[in-house]
Length: 224
Image 1: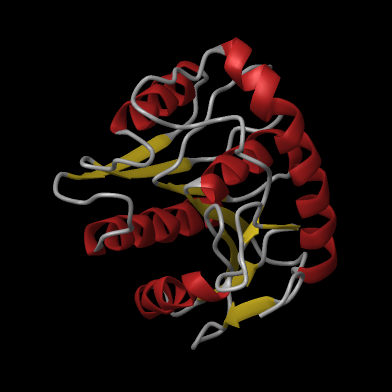
Image 2: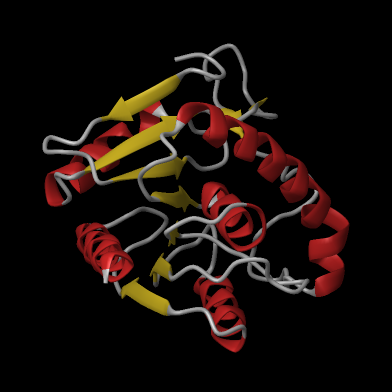
């Protein structure tokens, strides 16, 4: 699967929504296909589209070629880093705006306009999903798996959001989840959370089940 290629997992029943699912740092849309297939089993009326990041992975070599949504070379999400306004503005804010602009063009070109669109992501893709759904596009809901985000400006949109995290995540520590949760709640986002007490930096079965419940509820609420 090359840059700008897309994996689709189509709804097995009449499609009532599309989830744009963004992979993590160095991954690809193909990497997320098994996860999307499992979600599709839980949500047979939802299609999933899994694009590749718009940039080649900055640490790829002859043995591994992946993609990224923006560079993380200057940001290490380790136990000592705090996502302060200064860190976010200096290292992440501008790159997220650029990535969101590209993603918006892609969504408008690739996704049907007549049904609800959800934005979902894992890790780095979750950060982009939050930025996209809160500032750049009127999505039906945001699904963040093992991600991170910090609100710096007045929100443009307030869709319902779902945050999942593994309590033992060594890559994106749980405190980033707690910070994101707090900031979304402070900004009156209707929030659903899910924490797997034994999971590390992956999406567990519990996370998938809880995400499916969130999407199903958001679709039902959108009809009422």
